[in-house]
Image 1: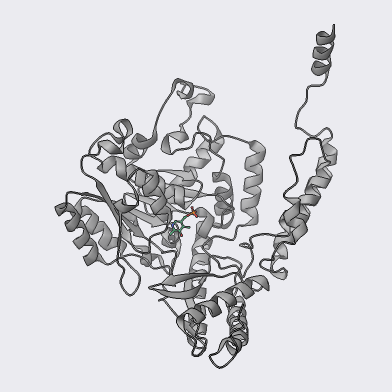
Image 2: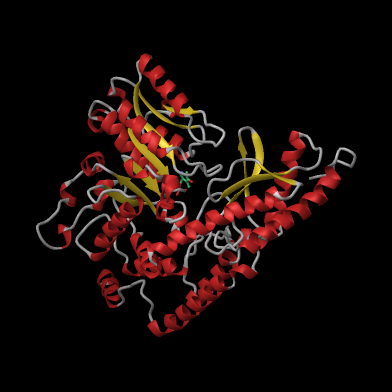
Length: 502
Ligand SMILES: *Cc1c(COP(=O)(O)O)cnc(C)c1O
């Protein structure tokens, strides 16, 4: 019979994704490993970034593959079209936005995590214990008590959402989980400086409170939250029938690296009965840097902290961490236990359910890459590297201050330097065009990756040195090349010359 024939054929050839010949993949895998080490070793010799040619863009429009290709060909495609055109953040002269520069041990961790393939939603297995241990280590790094709780998440944005969700639920005055935000009797207000990261806006939206529930408080000359203005806003809101619920302190703003006065915010939060959350995505880990730890004093008094191992611990993306002082409040915000996820007294299901501390059910094994790098280097070395980046930020600021054609546009607190080319007599709009063009040419010529921003209404270039490969000579090169490109462009754009800047 036909159907029986088909059934027996398929039984004879159960398919799998495992390689038909392990010896084959072994040779190829060793080559991939060799290439990977060469790739990292020689990163300094390559451009920071390069534009992708048309054929590379076309490559990514190929339709869904229906039939097999040899793995060696698949790897060839990846090497040519992906590995050759990176974002560039592992390069010693990548200083755009704010991200870490990864590390080889972390990459091995990601590889081994994928080989084991464990799901960290919960269960009784070693990866779960390691996940909790890395959270414990994060608590220890920022001075949180052992009784606090926490969870590894995709990054700082999610870590902030975790902290702010607990804050909302604790301060709502009703059971928000059951009744929703519409039942909150007095509208909640959250406070942060006008330098607060955009992820907090998204968080307020996702929490159902809306963007207006986050009041942006003006900053002082150092771009730190103005405490008098904060107090005034709180009393104004109370008088108007709002419920002040939470103050978000920033330890390292994304624009300039400014650090709010965290000790003062802790006192203010206690007096005003607010939840005190710290966005420490940039600066929480300064707590492990011996030369600069005092800058973030007070962070240990927060109710919740967001920090980002994929920034100053250089974990390969992604790894963020949310810490919550009150473990009961944390679990009470997220735990849901349907029957299919109940704990058993013994066996695989007897472990802690890590999905009770956040929004994800399935969770990747993020802990391994962080754990391996911390174990290999020790936390003291990470602390020294943070000090090194901060010293480099100050060194760059000194180089810029010494060049008449350049000027600093914001105070340098840590590793973020905002500056611009003066352009000799150009107007505001032209100055912005000049500096934008300098930034683009530095990228396109593969020299350095910077970003730009606006600080107190003034456009500027921005260098964020979260990079364990940067050397002082790289910063000297940046200044020299900025002067070269700037002089070329300024000559063409000067009021007397032609306006030919593209
Ligand atoms: C990077 C950053 C975030 C967002 O973190 P992700 O890891 O990118 O999600 C939030 N706040 C600050 C201050 C940051 O620098």
